[in-house]
Image (cartoon, rainbow, N blue to C red):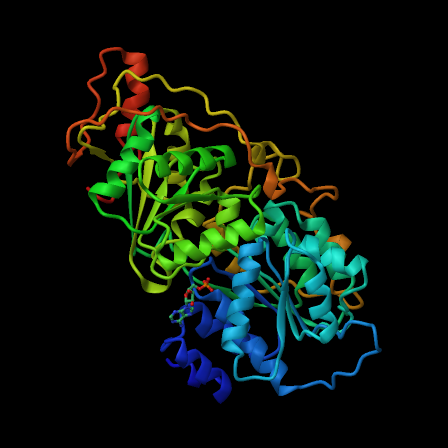
Length: 504
Ligand code: AMP
């Protein structure tokens, strides 16, 4: 299959060819014809699958086929024709970059608006006229309030990474945006997972959508080599430094659970001569963009990120992702490791796991339906008598409004939902933006702004400056001998996977 057979115009094909794309990815092969046909779409796809081009290319094509005269009242913003909502600044910026690249031979304008930067240039740009606007919900609402954006003639709406937007507490903002849109429009919803909240949103928003699902990379794609290095909590940093230097890693994305932990780790790595910067919700947009640019260029060896800040980071062929700490929410593991092995490249995802994280690891393995190989690095053998300490909850987890603070069980159900044959049909007279009251059993409660990016806080495993040990080699873990049964059982559970390992 080629892009040409999907019915895209010469101008778009030229841009795509210049980017080196030869074959559409599975999501593109399905989404492009569906969007070109003009109907609504519900797509289960994670970042890394090529979903951005999956919706951007047909949007560009549709808008370019029906040009509109740009006449608007002086002093008023020109109407936006396609609106793409994304959860984070990074993702919004990246999507807009893709729109600009794919549309470089078309006469369509695009812009992105997100918070954390001055609103003034955005206002000027919107006034000049923007066909395709990529926005984060909060800043878009600011523009709506200031009447610096005109959404009354939006023809196509995209909710990108809808699950993340709901996780971040944007549901009310999204509904306010929906209320400002014209009823007649095309709606595209992309989500990696399908909680009841997402189902309710899709149910109210989409009219007989085409249903598309691409395989979840965690269950099928074997491009990412995943492994666990059991290690004591105090020696994680030392082990990370050892791995980076002994294996000569040049570009490593490291995840911590907290902003504080990210800062501290970046500082310590720098002291050890490894160039590192932290990105998280407390950093200015400028600092985040600079860090990401340096990392992409290869001048920065390590980028330490929290889950929310890393969302949408798109780096071609990122070879190494390290979980310095496991995420509290198992689904985040999948998002984290999805940063590597993107669009066909192979990658490695390594988790440094201490005894405290035994239960987190168990829930990740349950989610991905496989046990991950344990590999103890010689010289970093964990203390068999170490006692698990409770992990202080990150505020993300305890926030109200997300199934009582817990994310809905992450879904192989992405598959289940999308297999429903008869998609919900909109009732006559129902406004496109408002979920039908009578058929929204999982309708989210209002008042749910639960997880602002700045809410990440709290614990950080405190790595002590450690004395170097002997030059390490890796060795397979042996089950703990366990002299003290109660303590040893904690460590044994970490060292030996519960589920039957696919790796033998
Ligand atoms: P996305 O899932 O949209 O974030 O895309 C992931 C990465 O895949 C991006 O770096 C894209 O540039 C790249 N990509 C998208 N479509 C293709 C394609 N058909 N062939 C090769 N690379 C692609």
